[in-house]
Image (cartoon, one colour):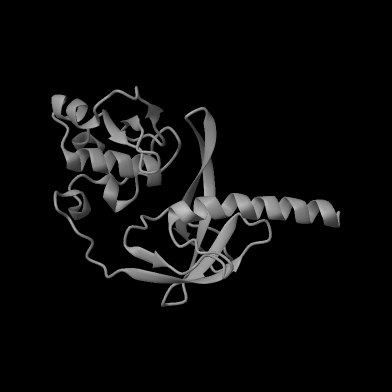
Length: 195
Protein backbone atom coordinates (compact mmCIF):
# COMPACT_ATOMS: atom_id res chain seq x y z
CA UNK A 1 0.00 0.00 0.00
CA UNK A 2 1.20 3.59 -0.65
CA UNK A 3 0.07 7.10 0.30
CA UNK A 4 -0.55 10.13 -1.94
CA UNK A 5 3.22 10.77 -2.09
CA UNK A 6 3.84 7.25 -3.44
CA UNK A 7 5.61 6.11 -0.25
CA UNK A 8 5.29 2.47 0.75
CA UNK A 9 3.31 2.17 3.98
CA UNK A 10 4.16 -0.60 6.42
CA UNK A 11 2.18 0.86 9.34
CA UNK A 12 -1.33 -0.44 9.95
CA UNK A 13 -3.22 2.79 9.28
CA UNK A 14 -6.51 1.20 10.33
CA UNK A 15 -5.14 1.12 13.90
CA UNK A 16 -3.99 4.75 13.84
CA UNK A 17 -6.08 7.88 14.37
CA UNK A 18 -6.80 9.77 11.13
CA UNK A 19 -5.46 12.96 12.72
CA UNK A 20 -3.68 13.69 15.98
CA UNK A 21 -1.76 16.46 17.71
CA UNK A 22 1.94 16.31 18.56
CA UNK A 23 4.85 18.52 19.54
CA UNK A 24 7.38 18.97 16.77
CA UNK A 25 10.62 17.36 18.02
CA UNK A 26 12.81 20.29 16.99
CA UNK A 27 10.70 23.31 17.96
CA UNK A 28 8.24 21.83 20.49
CA UNK A 29 5.50 23.75 18.64
CA UNK A 30 2.11 21.99 18.49
CA UNK A 31 1.31 20.47 15.10
CA UNK A 32 -1.46 18.35 13.58
CA UNK A 33 -0.53 15.18 11.70
CA UNK A 34 -2.60 13.13 9.26
CA UNK A 35 -1.92 9.39 9.36
CA UNK A 36 -0.39 8.09 6.15
CA UNK A 37 0.79 11.51 4.94
CA UNK A 38 4.22 13.13 5.12
CA UNK A 39 4.76 16.27 7.16
CA UNK A 40 2.43 18.16 9.45
CA UNK A 41 0.18 21.22 9.74
CA UNK A 42 0.79 24.06 12.21
CA UNK A 43 -1.60 24.11 15.16
CA UNK A 44 -2.63 27.01 17.34
CA UNK A 45 0.10 27.74 19.87
CA UNK A 46 -2.41 27.58 22.73
CA UNK A 47 -3.52 24.01 22.00
CA UNK A 48 -2.72 21.47 24.70
CA UNK A 49 -1.49 18.46 22.73
CA UNK A 50 -2.12 15.91 25.49
CA UNK A 51 -5.64 17.19 26.20
CA UNK A 52 -6.53 17.20 22.49
CA UNK A 53 -5.35 13.62 22.02
CA UNK A 54 -6.98 12.46 25.25
CA UNK A 55 -10.33 13.99 24.23
CA UNK A 56 -10.22 11.85 21.07
CA UNK A 57 -9.01 8.72 22.92
CA UNK A 58 -5.64 8.86 21.17
CA UNK A 59 -2.99 7.04 23.18
CA UNK A 60 0.64 8.13 23.47
CA UNK A 61 1.68 5.06 21.45
CA UNK A 62 -0.66 6.05 18.62
CA UNK A 63 0.49 9.68 18.66
CA UNK A 64 4.16 8.59 18.66
CA UNK A 65 3.52 6.25 15.72
CA UNK A 66 1.80 8.95 13.67
CA UNK A 67 4.58 11.45 14.46
CA UNK A 68 7.29 8.94 13.47
CA UNK A 69 5.51 8.11 10.22
CA UNK A 70 5.02 11.75 9.26
CA UNK A 71 8.67 12.63 9.89
CA UNK A 72 10.55 9.49 8.81
CA UNK A 73 8.17 7.74 6.41
CA UNK A 74 5.44 5.16 6.92
CA UNK A 75 7.70 2.18 6.26
CA UNK A 76 9.68 2.63 9.51
CA UNK A 77 8.93 0.32 12.44
CA UNK A 78 8.19 3.25 14.75
CA UNK A 79 5.16 4.15 12.57
CA UNK A 80 3.44 1.07 13.99
CA UNK A 81 1.61 1.81 17.26
CA UNK A 82 2.24 -1.79 18.39
CA UNK A 83 6.00 -1.47 17.97
CA UNK A 84 7.78 -1.77 21.36
CA UNK A 85 9.41 1.66 20.97
CA UNK A 86 5.98 3.30 21.19
CA UNK A 87 4.90 1.59 24.39
CA UNK A 88 4.91 3.55 27.67
CA UNK A 89 8.28 3.33 29.40
CA UNK A 90 9.95 1.81 26.35
CA UNK A 91 13.72 2.01 26.37
CA UNK A 92 16.02 1.43 23.44
CA UNK A 93 17.38 -2.10 23.35
CA UNK A 94 20.55 -1.08 21.59
CA UNK A 95 23.62 0.19 23.38
CA UNK A 96 24.46 3.83 22.73
CA UNK A 97 26.49 4.35 19.59
CA UNK A 98 29.44 6.73 19.39
CA UNK A 99 30.30 8.49 16.14
CA UNK A 100 33.75 9.94 15.39
CA UNK A 101 34.36 12.98 13.21
CA UNK A 102 35.46 12.06 9.67
CA UNK A 103 35.20 15.10 7.36
CA UNK A 104 33.15 18.06 6.17
CA UNK A 105 31.89 18.42 2.61
CA UNK A 106 33.01 21.35 0.44
CA UNK A 107 29.93 23.51 0.93
CA UNK A 108 29.63 22.74 4.67
CA UNK A 109 26.15 21.33 4.24
CA UNK A 110 27.15 17.97 5.75
CA UNK A 111 29.49 16.88 8.50
CA UNK A 112 30.50 13.23 8.19
CA UNK A 113 31.17 10.70 10.97
CA UNK A 114 32.01 7.02 11.17
CA UNK A 115 30.63 4.53 13.67
CA UNK A 116 32.51 1.66 15.30
CA UNK A 117 31.78 -0.54 12.24
CA UNK A 118 33.12 2.14 9.84
CA UNK A 119 29.59 2.98 8.70
CA UNK A 120 29.29 6.54 7.40
CA UNK A 121 26.87 9.06 8.99
CA UNK A 122 26.25 12.77 8.54
CA UNK A 123 24.61 15.77 10.14
CA UNK A 124 22.82 17.64 7.38
CA UNK A 125 20.65 20.70 7.14
CA UNK A 126 17.41 19.18 5.85
CA UNK A 127 14.91 22.01 5.79
CA UNK A 128 13.96 25.38 7.18
CA UNK A 129 10.90 26.14 9.25
CA UNK A 130 9.19 29.44 9.96
CA UNK A 131 9.12 30.10 13.71
CA UNK A 132 8.79 33.36 15.66
CA UNK A 133 8.94 35.50 12.50
CA UNK A 134 12.15 33.99 11.11
CA UNK A 135 13.44 30.88 9.39
CA UNK A 136 15.32 28.27 11.42
CA UNK A 137 17.53 25.51 10.03
CA UNK A 138 16.46 21.98 10.93
CA UNK A 139 19.20 19.35 10.99
CA UNK A 140 19.01 15.58 11.01
CA UNK A 141 21.51 12.83 11.72
CA UNK A 142 21.45 10.27 8.92
CA UNK A 143 23.20 7.07 7.98
CA UNK A 144 24.87 7.41 4.56
CA UNK A 145 25.86 5.27 1.62
CA UNK A 146 29.60 4.69 1.14
CA UNK A 147 29.60 7.55 -1.37
CA UNK A 148 28.24 9.92 1.31
CA UNK A 149 24.61 10.24 0.23
CA UNK A 150 22.16 10.31 3.19
CA UNK A 151 19.73 7.41 3.45
CA UNK A 152 17.20 8.98 5.82
CA UNK A 153 16.77 10.62 9.22
CA UNK A 154 17.58 8.70 12.40
CA UNK A 155 16.59 9.31 15.99
CA UNK A 156 19.83 10.42 17.64
CA UNK A 157 18.82 10.19 21.30
CA UNK A 158 20.99 7.08 21.80
CA UNK A 159 23.98 8.36 19.83
CA UNK A 160 26.92 10.42 21.06
CA UNK A 161 28.98 12.40 18.60
CA UNK A 162 32.60 13.56 18.62
CA UNK A 163 33.44 17.23 18.35
CA UNK A 164 32.08 18.46 15.03
CA UNK A 165 35.24 19.56 13.26
CA UNK A 166 38.30 19.91 15.48
CA UNK A 167 38.05 23.71 15.66
CA UNK A 168 34.70 23.81 17.42
CA UNK A 169 32.85 22.14 20.26
CA UNK A 170 29.58 21.26 18.57
CA UNK A 171 28.67 17.76 19.65
CA UNK A 172 24.94 18.29 20.09
CA UNK A 173 22.23 19.21 17.57
CA UNK A 174 21.85 22.60 19.28
CA UNK A 175 25.57 23.35 19.00
CA UNK A 176 25.61 22.19 15.39
CA UNK A 177 22.84 24.67 14.56
CA UNK A 178 25.15 27.46 15.74
CA UNK A 179 28.21 25.95 14.03
CA UNK A 180 26.52 25.66 10.63
CA UNK A 181 25.81 29.38 9.93
CA UNK A 182 29.39 30.32 10.85
CA UNK A 183 30.66 27.72 8.38
CA UNK A 184 28.25 28.94 5.70
CA UNK A 185 29.48 32.52 6.19
CA UNK A 186 33.09 31.30 5.95
CA UNK A 187 32.30 29.34 2.78
CA UNK A 188 30.54 32.36 1.26
CA UNK A 189 33.50 34.65 1.99
CA UNK A 190 35.99 32.07 0.69
CA UNK A 191 34.03 31.60 -2.55
CA UNK A 192 33.74 35.39 -3.02
CA UNK A 193 37.48 35.89 -2.56
CA UNK A 194 38.44 32.99 -4.86
CA UNK A 195 36.10 33.54 -7.82
